[in-house]
Length: 116
Length: 113
Image (tube, rainbow over all chains, first blue to last red; front, side, top):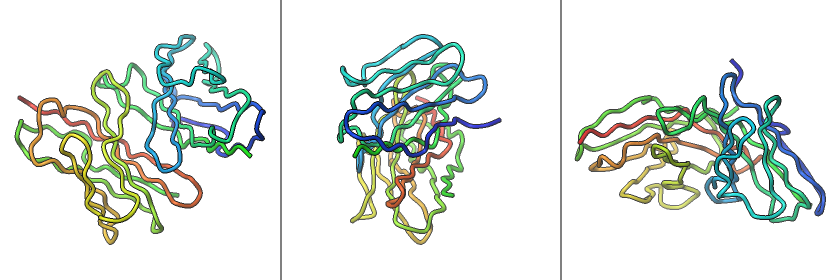
């Protein structure tokens, strides 16, 4: 059973370009979480999605950031018009049901976004 | 590749008992170390982190962790747990080079009033 898969592992973009980060949850998991780790800081929650629904996006910046988790295919975190401050590691986690309700989170290995 | 081991999968304690959760990692170079907590129905929160300096790190809510380089360990401790400490605890390690970040599988702590 493959774990949570994130790709690409490293993504380099120039300022103003778009970044698309993909996350395939573990088989059978329908809940996906995105976190961002800024250099020398801890993880910060961004968004929580179930299939086709955004449940909690309280950690998402109001502009340029969006996320989706379609019925088919991976969850996508999209950052439009990237700026240098977007450089960070982005982690995805999945769970079969809402995490914390006796359900564990399983983490991907992250995507390192570098904005030049 | 780096690996992070949390040997205790489920821990059940009575209130006021002392807590120690184990965390070992495999990388031999310079690392940054973290403990995260996830309370029921909530999102992951940072408890404490170690980058350099004093190997005994104090975190929020009375938690502390000690970095023992020779043992590749970063165990989490609390002298007296409370019912509200019931949660899932994750150890994580990042390497100073390569921006890699690795999580342990988590330890579920249940504190009985």
